[in-house]
Structure formats: C-alpha cells, structure tokens
Image (cartoon, rainbow, N blue to C red; front, side, top):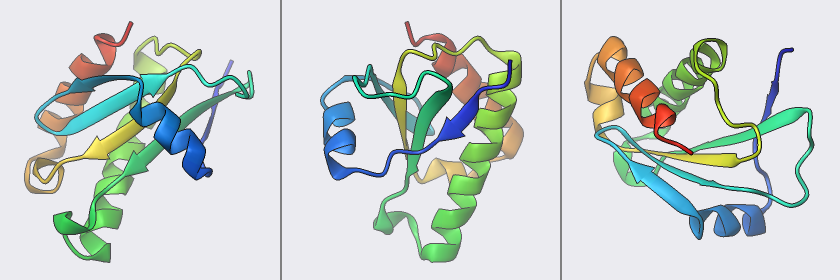
Length: 113
C-alpha cells in the first residue's frame, strides 16, 4: 500500500512536534511524535529550512532534496507511520553530495523507534 505524504500546516502542530523526541545527524535534525488528530492513511512529514541557510532558491533546493530522499526512504525503509516527522535542515545539505546525504538520512531514519 502506498502511503500519502502530507505536510503539517498548523503552528500548534509544529510546536507540539518540537516538544517531542529528536535525533540529530550531520545534515538534519528529526523531531518526531504521535499526533492525536492524524489521518491514518497518510504520513505527516514537514521540511523546515531556516532563513540563515540562504536565499529562497537555496532553501527550496534543500527542501526538494529532502523530499526526494524521503520518497526513496518510503520505498526502501520501514518507516513508522504512527509518528509525525519534522525535518530541520542544516547548511551541509546544500553543500555536500546527494549520495552522502541520502545514506546519512537513511541511517538516521532507522534509529527512529
């Protein structure tokens, strides 16, 4: 069954996730927590890039990279659908090679309980 990815839109959901568990790596910080009002057929994943990472073009490229990696991860890794995820990008995501970033994020996602 294909899982539909949806993103968070409410400020209170972001704040709630920031209070949950977190895992950091060289490229990203992942916040994850169970949301009470979550749609069972979809997976809530949001990507955040701070303004200090660069202009809009750089930030959008970082988010596109992360979305591509997550689409591959859904096909290859067993991701826990009970959690909602918030990915906060770091500056290295823009600078390093795609393959290195993908490998590191896959390893980080496998650590999520």
